[in-house]
Length: 141
Length: 141
Image (cartoon, rainbow over all chains, first blue to last red; front, side):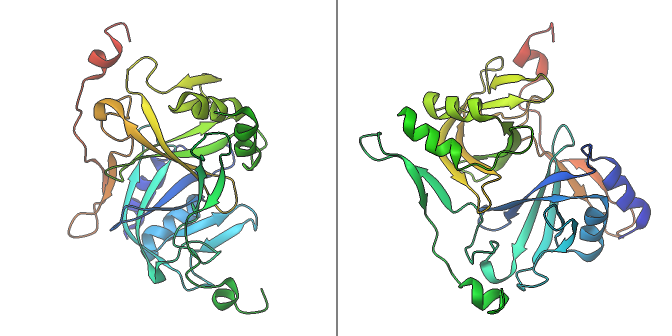
């Protein structure tokens, strides 16, 4: 990735007051929305340079190469920017078919589900755990 | 929508320090990601009650019933919550097939496109304007 070019990419983003932008990761084949994460300028530059999703972890306050521990890397297929420049859409190939740290395909595995009488709606898990967390991160975590 | 039930829905969300949560709107048929917007608690409650997307506009600092001016309402099909509770995914039926205020199907119409020699990547518009803005909002806007 040409440096000048990457800078053009970064400059088009309307970074928030914390220097971050929300990023939607979507499976490029199935169209499934996998997760919402955040990037800072460095994360976006590295994503372009390395061809894989690099996010900024707000909880750990550091760059986070998606899959660095789990192996569940997201290969960059396409990058799109919205009309206001304040959100990114990353189309990815999800290695291992697991995006979520819980071992599910997508982080959006809870569905608001109404019972037939519409009085007992609740959050229901709609996705199976494909791999237990201890198998992903080791028993220490 | 039962009030107690809607409160359960709202209480599961990890609202940020501004009382907001980012919301991804996705076309329930095509799987296309349409936009990223924000909700506060009232917006989520109204979305459930009215069966249509109601967002909180950060720029206008008020509730915004998607389509209130344009007619491009988003009918609620499904609501999903992510593992951390800090992002929502709204699967919708996009009335009029236009989500973006620019008259395009999706707000994510700019694609980062590399030339074949990889030295001249740039943001390219990849979606046609389906309806000019003046036809959507009237000539006064």
